[in-house]
Image (cartoon, rainbow, N blue to C red; front, side, top):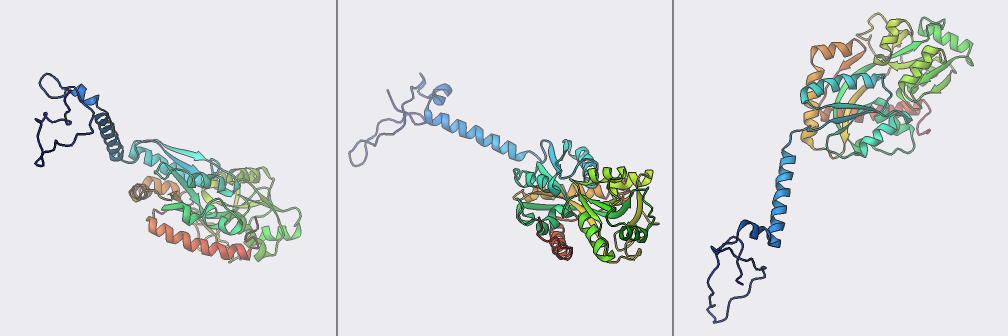
Length: 368
């Protein structure tokens, strides 16, 4: 049986110049067809040819997969809060717009607990392919590192900033049955009945906890602190009368303020909120140190491709500038942003430094 080189006609026997016969090939023999050329099936039967074919198919598959535009399947946005909270509201609003643009479903996955740690940890451990994104906020990214001695994530090491989505108005609200229609009346009530006045927060070390501590320190009050596992249960108990007051994000309580289930006493920005122009700030109420502003943003697991981050940021920022979404968010106390990844990264650094000083002043630095 003659030996053939793959895909070539058989060569006649030759004699080397030295007179020696040419070296034998190590290829396995392929039985030639009657025309002297291996048929297609004879070619595939050769071990080397089979491996070459498999490699070619895999290369074509990988090329086709890489060529698919992002996203080519549903995207999961992890919200480290219960459904109905401020972060959940803006995340769902943006997700709806992105679904319309991309033609892919954007799934909101609420993972509350441990002041947002549970949800963020899931994102940091996800594959950095752009299909798991965090909808995060002030406390989980820039306050937790100062309150907790040990965290399963590092904001700057394990996460890639995409864009700051909103700036949230922080408000002081009370149960409407409480005989307090101003911050000064609330403070007076707290001083006269310190054991009976309790305030709720969204968790130990949460921004709402620090706001409560700032008021306690400046007013000289001694209220009982009741931490909850997120925004929704805290607001629910405030409406039910289990606690007297809370600091909250405006989007999370806007509907309750409008319905009269909660009474708004003050906002916590340096200027009056657009959504509540008739409500005084904490500065105007006589407590200038209680200035707190919340915010939220999208982040991806570290290592996510820059082109995916840029696409997510670009499309999110475009939707945040649309009149319908902008008006909807502004009406509940969320001012749309849409910063670049670089701007968001710099903002995270400045916020981290600020909350380090506040947590130390409040006496809860690395207390957990």
